[in-house]
Every structure is written in structure tokens, then in C-alpha cells.
Image 1 (cartoon, each protein chain N blue to C red):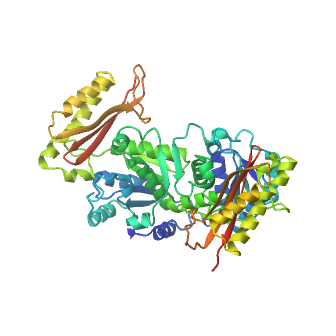
Image 2: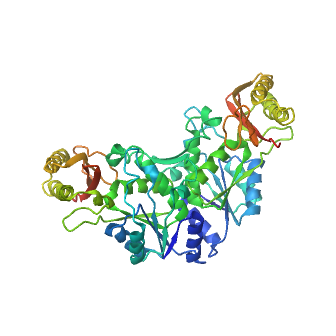
Length: 287
Length: 287
């Protein structure tokens, strides 16, 4: 496994590994590091599906708001590299901020529509920052397939819209959310939680399980489900709801009464202290 | 020479021409068609510098304002294809609007700074439309080198900024403006001019020649040169000035008094009837 910090070196290393074979495929897993089993599952999917696996670890300042946790976002490169090695990654790209943004960036990639709700509403500018850095990374790595976790379902919707709209020759592969045994979705931010917060945070996954049942089995209307989810989360006194939304998937549009979308997403963001956790479930509506 | 209308077919054709050689270079000339000798010079530059030359002809609705000339922009595919063939183009990409925009596009690429003045000020949204369609075309063609004419100097500045900011692995090659013998810069829009307008339109190139002399030889300050240019253009009664600007090049920043930039651009836009003509000259300041 090679670890490179410079864009030029990364390009050369990929070229070298590809050799003269123009049909060698590149799989790419962009991350912010502090890797957990969720990331490992993305790397393993890439390992299975593509010839050369590139992992990037970059905490992108552009996608953090002024009062968000850019500075204290957890970092542990040594552990990350071990995990990447175990997962069979070929190249780790570990750039400094100055390598990615040598001067003030004047170009922005922005995606309308799918960014307006959920985290896009709570974190203005966040998805412009994501779309812009992901565009940069795609242009640097030139992957055939990219792997993202479904925990950030809205991020996947944004990337897919961008890839589609801008004719990027890339396949976006969504991978299932990984969970602790008790149901908590894996997240680098879980490390911030106190023991009591950690316990109460189970309310996210448990309310999603209930919501799935209320929608798919009991056929309750979206408004009713939303109210029940809010009531359920309120049973965790340390949690403050940022949003609870039920939208069409993957369009992320409001569910119109009487409409019968094929898939819905129930998405949550709940704060415990300063730690903001997100989770979601996709409910296939069948017939 | 092959003429293709579908994105998939274009990708396959390029792949096929490249064969298994991963180091075959692709040169790309994006145009709106109605080709003239200026475009031919871009295709010839591409022919000399790259292995496979792709020309695109696409009048991009996204970069036209609601009251601009999208519908009546001149088109003549038959003549264009002959010119492309003569210039040694390998592939002409001639997509319909529905191929480039099969549904409402939600993603925008926008470049701040260099787009605020000159044509960016007169044509709001124009350069977002340019940056977005050029991003799409770059992702479709995947060129190594792209060729643009210096008549659209601001367009080159925008594309360069975008390529640089987003780490596109592409070299932007600016090519000199071609002119009629009497000095008029070649433009597809010249066809709109009446005989009298055509005669008076020489005021653009003649004022640029004078401005160059006033700046480089006479060392007059920018404000004074701008005033003189405006006075000179006013001698053509059919012309209405859209802008006359003297800016640093390639930064396109105002010239601060006392500063000594290496290069300046004198840029003009003048309307004759409904026809808007642009022209510019880069003045190297030397020492």
C-alpha cells in the first residue's frame, strides 16, 4: 500500500499501477478519516469490484460551517492506515489542506433541489462544499466506480445528481449503513458521545425501525409517522431534534398526499450535546 | 471524419480511435458552430498538438439570457462539417439540446471573480452556463488539451480558473484572434451586420490598436486611455458601447493607480443594432 500526499504523485502512482492497460478499473472511497467498520465495508466493496483501490482521507474545510466541528473533527492517521491496509487498499491519498486549496478557490459546484432539505437546510453551504471537493477528487483520481455509505443518503443523492448532470463517467455505488449490535449507526462522530448520550442515541435507530413498520405494514400516512417518530425521540431527554423528515427516495421531494412513491426515506438528525448524529432508512413501498 | 450525435457513441468512438494506447492524446475544440477561419485555426492547432481531434458544435441554451440571440444564433452544419474535414478533425460531436440536457439540470458550476466584469456584468448567468456546459463536454470528451480563441479572453480566464480550481487534468491552449484584412475580428455574429454597420464596426479593432499605443508607448494612465477609446468609438454613430474596460490580465482585476501589472487587457463590447461585438488586445507592459 502506498501513501501519497501530493496530487501529482497520486496521478503518477495510479498511472504506474495501471500500466499500459487502458481497461484497468479504479475504485475510489473518499472519506474524512477516523475510519470505522463502515468505511472498511466500502473499501472491501471497492476491492471486490475494481482493480485498483484508492482511499482518500481529507477533512474538507469547505463543507464545515463557521460554528461546526472542523477543528475538532477526530483524526487518527496511524490507525486509519492500518485499517486501509487490512482492507486491501492500494493507494491512500492524504493531502494537506494547502495541497487541495493552494489559493482561495473561486469555482463552486452546486446542486439544487436535493440539497434543499434535511442536512442541506440545517447546514447551509455544506453540500456545495461536498460537491466541490468531490469534483476535485474525481478529477484527480479519475475513478470508474466510487463508493459511499447510505448513512449519508442525501450525500449520495447529491453526488448522483452531479455525476448525472455533468456527465461524469463514473458509477456511484451506495453501500449499506453498518451498525453496532444494539443498532447505533457507525459514525466517526460517535466517539464524542458520553456513556449516557451513547445509550440514549439508540433512539435514532429504534425510531427508524418503528417508522418502517408504521409505513410499510400499518400504512400510516407520512405526517402521522413523523409525529410518532418525534414523540419517540422525545423520550430521550438528552436528544434535541434537528430534523425528522419523510421524503421520496431518491428524489428527496415531499410526499404528496395521495401519491404512491416506490421508495421513501425516513431521515433523522438529532443532537446530543454538540454532537449531531444522522441516520435514515429507505422503505420500499411495494404494492 | 466521423459525425456523432449521442454521448455514448462519442465515448465509444474516442475509445476505439485510441485503441489500447493509454498515451494517445485527445485535443478538443468546443464551439457553437457557424465556423470561420478563427475556428479553423483552433482545429489546426489541435491537429498539430494532439493525436485525436474532437470538435463539438453545440449552441448551448444555458449561456444565453432570455433576451439574447439563442434562437437566431446562425447555424450551418453542412458548411461546418466541410470546414472541419478540411482542418483534419477526427470526430465531430453534434448533439441535440435534449442529448445534453435530457432533464432540467440541477447542477451548476460557477466561477467567482473573473466573471464579475466585462461580459459577466453585461450577461448575468452567462459564464455559469459556459462553465457548466464546458464541464459536461470535458467529462464526455476527456481531452488532454483544449483550444479556445483569445477573442473570448474572459472565457479563457474563466475556463482556466475552473480547470485549476477543480484539478481538471487538462491543458488550456489560448489561440490568437483571427481578423479580416481590415482588422475586424472574425465572429459568427458578423453575419448579422449590415454593410454600413460592418464598415463602422472597424472602430473596435482600430480603437484597440490606438489603445495599445497609448498604453505601451505613450504610457498614458488607464483612465485616460479608456476615455480616449470611448471618444474614438463614439465616432461610429451606429455603435452603442456596452463596455470599455482596461484590466489586469489574466486576473481581470481593476488596475490600481501606481501598480505595475505585467499585462493588461483592453476589452470592448459594442452593439450595432441588435448585434453585440466583442474584441480585445493584451498589452505586455515590459519595463
